Amino acid sequence: MRIESIGYATPAWILRGIAIAESGERDNAIGDDGISRGRMQLNRHYDAERRAKWGAFDPFSPHDAIRIADCILMANLRALGSWDLAIVGYRQGVAGVRRNGLCEWYVRRIKSAAR
Image 1 (tube, rainbow, N blue to C red):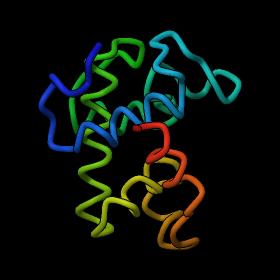
Image 2 (tube, rainbow, N blue to C red; image 1 turned 120 degrees about the vertical axis):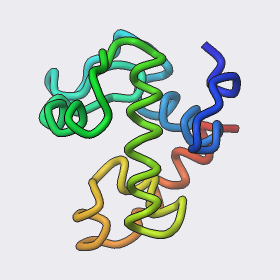
Image 3 (cartoon, rainbow, N blue to C red; image 1 turned 60 degrees about the horizontal axis):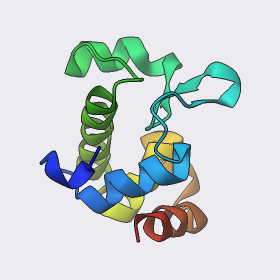
Image 4 (spheres, rainbow, N blue to C red; image 1 turned 60 degrees about the vertical axis):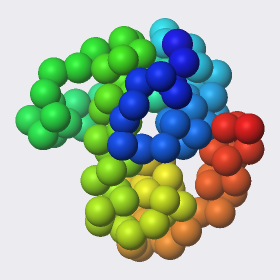
């Protein structure tokens, strides 16, 4: 699946970088002892909240996973004000970014994977 062809608000390179770094772009990936699922490694603990905000989704569907990741990243951008912080927020949440600041190694990992 080519992320560039989808047309979400988040730049394609960020979505692609997260998919590569988090799962190797595998739609059936399971991580964190079963907590994170799919290409975008969506954490199941936040499923109900995300469904309430953005509708039903299947974390193993590439289209659904990327749509939800786009929603997460855009919400992070609105809350945190920069793409680098929004990317870090994808990993540790907005509260984690506000508490811990920029996690430079994760931003580098996503940017490197996107190349």
